[in-house]
Image 1 (spheres, rainbow, N blue to C red):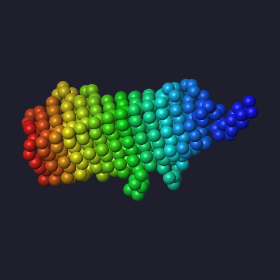
Image 2 (image 1 turned 135 degrees about the vertical axis):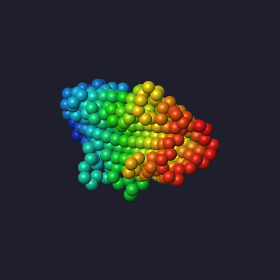
Image 3 (image 1 turned 45 degrees about the vertical axis):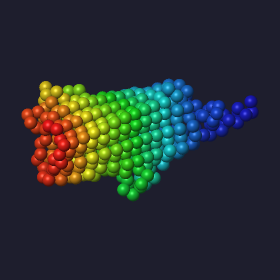
Length: 347
């Protein structure tokens, strides 16, 4: 009995609204603010109509949602808020339902950045952003799903050029019916996206701005919707876009940056009845150069429009060993300068 009382008092000093469980895990059974490091476990579903069910104000925190749900009203606040300078946060195994944001890092001026890992968490729906982590040192999301959000994941870091640790990794996730962008990655030095599925993203599945990315073995699909892009590379982003599948999008890959390699992808355009001006791969745009890119070993079958389009702002790109099918003889629309057919292409 004495031992139980000591542990109970100790746990109350750690965090309001919880008591320490066996084996060192601390149960969460109601709205809570976590102020000490440790391993926490959700013991029941928690529903609120406003505010935030879980606030994290400590580093080195693991939260096992334990198959349970955090639910907020559609116009409520966040479901989990991480306050700077908290870092080394892991959240796993449950559902985040409603609210304007699922997991949000509340940054402050001059903070040192944060590291966040998310595993096997399902988000649905969020009115704004399912996962928003600003000033990320490292971010990882695996085996999770985001459905019916305005934006799926937004990861940023303004200090990427000076901090070599800045990385983001997305593996085995599913993004469905996203109004805006499935994933926005900006300012990360290294980005990996592999084995993810994107369906019906309103603007683009992956939008990479600055930094280097390996984007491989992902599937991007859309219904008959104009304006959809699978992968959008801009602003100094350098990508290896390898072995992905694109079906039914108006643009498969749109590169407005230099030095990318786009290889081994399968791109099947929307039906001709969809209208618009589909393009399998587009290089450059007005005011956005796309130079010295390599396009090779892709299979592109556009039922209307071009397989590859070089805009006037694209220069000195090479394409080779592709299978290129476009309508009306428009396998390649070449409006740039210095772009080279290096041979082996099948039209």
